[in-house]
Image (tube, rainbow, N blue to C red; front, side):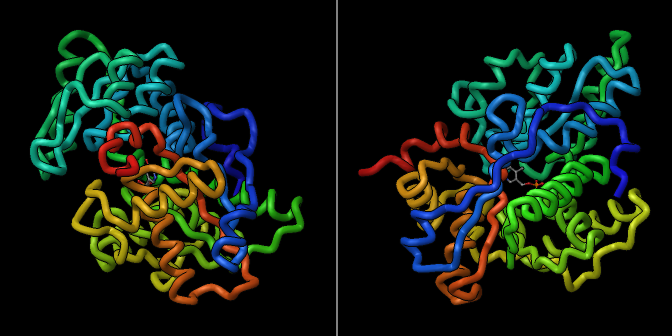
Length: 332
Ligand SMILES: *Cc1c(COP(=O)(O)O)cnc(C)c1O
């Protein structure tokens, strides 16, 4: 797809591993479960936002910005990684944190919130759930402008067509790697949130005619709404790249594992986090990959995959948030 025409910073000096989860696959009695270790991407503690930031921060630097501005939930991995990229590039970073769960902001909370402080965030603004987030970020940009500085606004999750290129690149990385490994996959499963990861993977897979079905597992929204969001961003990303847009039918974003709402723990999430930790020593997270992996396990239980098929779970990271959920995840 000639992605080299887009300016890019490099935050991971290698492809992330694709590993077979032997213990878990044996425990389940099939299918074969494989994992793409995007939890091992570069910048502080890795995760999917690192790939998006490679393109977004290159654009910020090209525009002469001195400060990155972004938004996320109170335990946002995206905010942690945007701040980490700013540190690495010698930029400042200001965060807008949205209390999607009322009263959820705790200045002294552990997990990503602790890392915001440790990594030296310049300023945090807390807003209520459903607030005008772009407006709040524009206000921060105006404050900077008044001081003769220049902010660069990154949307929530880094999910715009430029950020989604990170996951178009990941789809190509998966296709190259699996070809090298002689590994024929049958399905790919990924968490679906602000949609950049899901959309980017879809554009990358469809644009390469991979014929590899991709299933998103929602962490926040009802199915129809999320599928609409993913398709919209996929169309915009394809247009930006000059490739054919994926059809609406290729977008699958299941909402059966959201539970009571975004970031609210579920029994299936807890079980999935424990199972992967105890069979493979791999850490999921409570908000995204724990629910997405619970979805994968649920699909296995429903018999959606053949016993001898190979299913790739794209591990999008997030383990620092575990430390803010110790009460929920610790054995009784
Ligand atoms: C942001 C995030 C996701 C969801 O990715 P989107 O591109 O926002 O859909 C999944 N997993 C983790 C750990 C994340 O931080």
